[in-house]
Amino acid sequence: MQLTTNQQRVLATLQQSSRPLSAYKILERLKSEGFKAPTQIYRALGCLAERGLVHRLESLNAYVRCAPPSTEQGVRAFAICDSCGHVDEFIVPSLNRYLGTWMKQNVFSLGSSTIELHGKCATCSKLDRTSDS
Amino acid sequence: MQLTTNQQRVLATLQQSSRPLSAYKILERLKSEGFKAPTQIYRALGCLAERGLVHRLESLNAYVRCAPPSTEQGVRAFAICDSCGHVDEFIVPSLNRYLGTWMKQNVFSLGSSTIELHGKCATCSKLDRTSDS
DNA sequence: CCCACAAATGTTACGTTATAACATGCCAAA
DNA sequence: TTTGGCATGTTATAACGTAACATTTGTGGG
Image 1: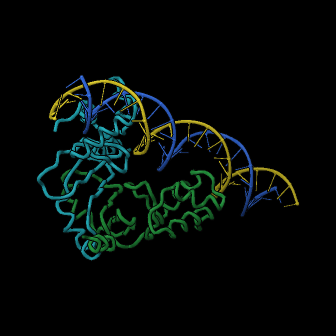
Image 2: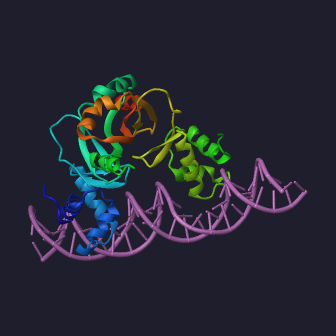
């Protein structure tokens, strides 16, 4: 199914941003296009998330455009630069292999996972070093 | 340093609970002991978190008592049962080994990590199976 | 003993994030 | 053209979190 216009606008807003946006930030940016209430944003975000087009970063209460569902086996993870806000998405190839030991011992049937790493991206780390005294 | 009485009360509340509690849930339970405002709870939670006695589950906006800082090398992870709310804490022995490939390639200097798995614990999985038609 | 200072606590107010509940508009199939 | 579904709009409120300032408490120095 196609995206509705509201969904397209929300998706475009996220896509144009270099960092995650909260629902209310998105709302601000879309006020000029007639959006008025958070519900509208949350609804769109909900649909986009279902399709795997956006992802909510739990540790930021914010949303990012993300890679479409890939064939690659594994679990999504996000590396978030606390300096510049840049988010890098990658796949943890097999969570099972690493956590599998634990999960088998503990018989936990995995539904979904939240893996968010905070730190500094390459660019910001470099800046730090060059500005050292 | 010792815990203050407020911190002790908040910690005890979490300890007595079989599942994570939001700050406001904790507040409700402590109203009878004179707590009146969320600030009081958040302050206590802040201190307790600094000492590694409680942990905030980002995906739930809730807090759990957690194991004291261990000597074991690794990163904390949490397995959350979406049916009964039970939370199991464990250590991912070396995030570096698994994500290290990615982190080296991308030069990301890790600060903190959020790893939260959602699914069903053993007990709840069993219940499902026995209630199958 | 009393003051002064610091730390913890209390209190009020507000900011941010999210959802519930209901109204309206829009389009497509009968 | 009516009806039924679904996207959208609107209002209100719930849930989560923090800033700023007042008050209390406890401790060491005069």
